[in-house]
Length: 371
Image (tube, rainbow, N blue to C red; front, side, top):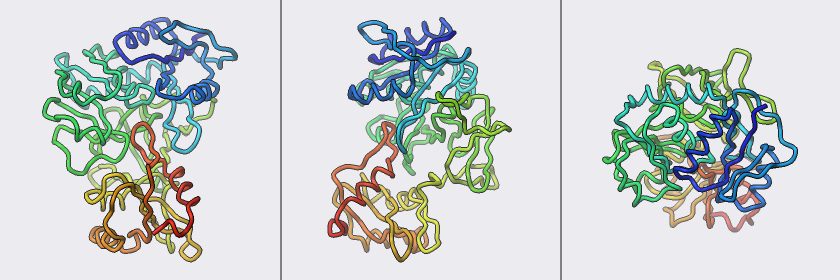
């Protein structure tokens, strides 16, 4: 039977060669984030239950592995933004479908070269490696993001998170994929805002439109995706793909008359205040030009049910100024009714706000610490 091999090593050419060798043997890869503290790594291994772990000191067998199915090629952890990460299983056929669809959407040729510089323990980083390997396109690999090295690269294609874009000379690349957290509203014309998740094998929507072989629909306000690049299932067995092949994303959104997808945010993040639904990401977009490190979360309220809270780490305008700014583009009920300053905002490795963690921090604060 196929094995699942965890990889806990620097991301370089040797890493890519090992991935190739594991796949050639018919086994699957589990990328481990080498930045994790040892207890977190052990927790991840206990959840994923691989057969072995490969590090710079060699390969070591692990006890009590979970069976891996024939055709499985990748088990990769979700970001864990709502708790313990889940192991998402992708088959080789799915990875090939993802690589081909992405390459078609971007017009990739043999003259292109991918630059991998995102953490490979997350789908946004690993998919750069898999699409280059599986379509036989040149690949440059960095062990993490370093702006100086990126700006010195002669690669033509790169995937970045939004926070890194400002540090990169965008003119050096033919195409830049932006994923993870909210993309900047103003970005160079060669930057493509992507929508996807671990379960979709990387981005499947580019600048609002589905890439080749991907179907989009909305069921009762929830975005659903269908295509050959979707996961086989989760490592522990269940799946969120229905009998007709639709993956329910847990994101709210709509398709306009042109077929462009508009994403409101995670369904569980919606704020219901006085019966009105408020999407944190919409409020964040309205004030993005005035603050750098901030987020919007829900705060329980005995009168309104929930209210809009702005959490920030830097010096901010007054609450009145923020409210006026939001009301320029959104209904008045979307404007924050309170602000609080914190030391840091918890985020995933791809830059997404851990809203549940942040809300818990705020709830634990004394009322007089909020303003």
